[in-house]
Length: 289
Image 1 (spheres, rainbow, N blue to C red):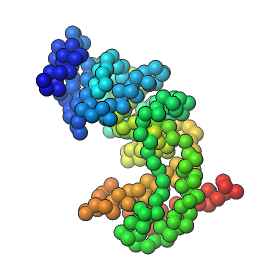
Image 2 (image 1 turned 30 degrees about the vertical axis):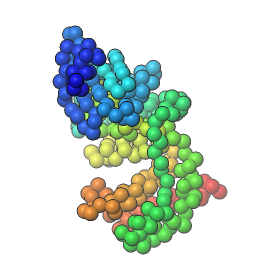
Image 3 (image 1 turned 45 degrees about the vertical axis):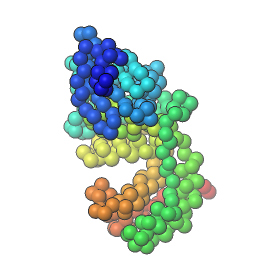
Image 4 (image 1 turned 120 degrees about the vertical axis):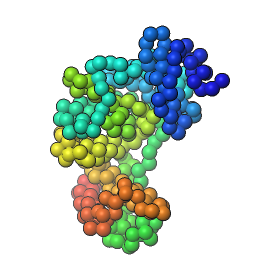
């Protein structure tokens, strides 16, 4: 019996039509009786943590797509495309101030929930954010023995010790306009696709959101920062610097230099990374007394 026939039988479906398949994750538009749904099926159990995330977050006040049924590897979800009050996000939403406020509100709620209920998400993989001597050496071989790398090596213990003390919480980690629905009337936002959810730094989440919004407008990024509210600025600055270093290291393993690392390479070349590291170290030493 193929996947479609097996799922149709398991969930008593009257119709099933596959709309997407990527890396063993299948999305179907289905019907059960007269109602339309989306069915998400994971070939590998290790990819099915999204189901656990829905079940946990459904108990909270966080706005979500409703889920109706599930098995170990499959979840039946509300078909939001049939709701006349909602539409899928679009690129123009990145410059809509009302939408940005709603995004900030959604993520602030998510982070508050996961910060105060860490035990709920112990099953999620934890991302490591740590500077590595080996990776810095690889960058030195690729880009030259710059002052930035030498300064980083000299202060690597202080930076890693600070990161080690930063709290890891469950984060969505996949902010993109195709991953949310927007209420046409009041711009309420509902994020979905929790299959990238993990335990990481809040700065990791904020960095991704801010970069995506900044790609549309600097005002959009600033609006989000204002609406989201307080966060650990030192953690954010160190994470942002670490991300550039991570991009440089990852890019050095490619035969042809990838475009996504060009910004980091340019900032290394013109001294902006070195200057940012100097600023971080001054602030860090001030905090440490």
